[in-house]
Length: 406
View 1 (cartoon, rainbow, N blue to C red):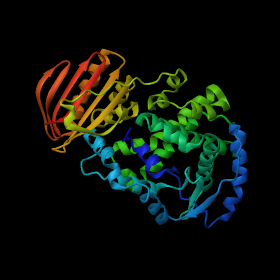
View 2 (view 1 turned 135 degrees about the vertical axis):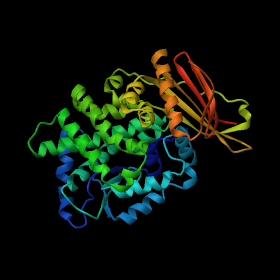
View 3 (view 1 turned 60 degrees about the vertical axis):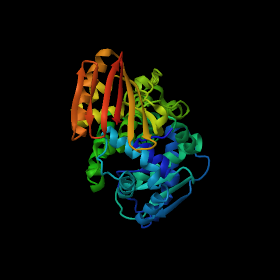
View 4 (view 1 turned 30 degrees about the vertical axis):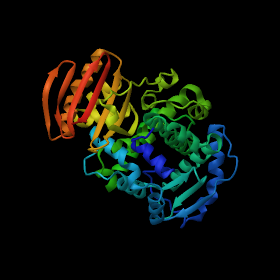
């Protein structure tokens, strides 16, 4: 299953877990920082109950080496389907370069990263500041999780579902961010439990720090939300689970991964095992004229951003919370080479399905220059958009979309 979620793209293509939004480490200029690794590891073990099985190797690299490292791991043609899907959904502008932006974002912001293919921690040599220890603890938390739960396998298994893989990234980055916060609390003599007020303060700090980076600040809303979500929502998710089940939460999120971003946003749904029920995308006829470019799932995070971008955050978040499941299929005409996007979303009631359809009308008006309605009823909508003809219809609690028809 080919995916199109930006955070999953980073994990799949770059195969690293980066500590973003913190000042670059001054490791090369301050070798004493390395001498603190043992104390950091002991503290992480005390908090989680998990022991480091072996030392974590590390190296120091500079920004240019990091850029080359990233560019070597993804080729432009590999992202065509992901980029096209996002553009047809209205998540990205038509002239947006997804690969270049991904490389630029990580190069701009990374303070350190753990490569769970090479089992090695990399530290950025430029810069310096009070955040050095924070970023290093974050990456050591990734190394600890990898030694117990094999992060490469964890991510690979998550690729079966776009939305599920984003949820798994939220587990990884959220737990590392939570442990980083708990570590700092221990240093200052505070309690191990992290109060909600501290989580909220850390979330604001991450969002404010990210906004100071030029590439991030200029990125479309979907890119910004997708990049921050694993850190902020993932940290709140880990905090909620720790409050319910304590140390066991550090293991459960890996042995029983969340199935959706909805479970990350609403931890009670994870604890209740309320998994998404994804409908099949509508069929296009004649199907033999088309080949599949990509298919996958959409989750509450996707619908939050999509609807909020073209309506309001209040309406987008409110309706997206009622999503039951969604999936998409990107097709290409074999001869004419034009793309068609088929996707479907199921909602928790017929009323919510109609509310979603009403909001999506505004999405189409916003994402296209051409929006010409040819036929309209309370449950069906047909017309012409920038990518071609579109058909939308409600079947019970499911809303079906075909966009790009010729």
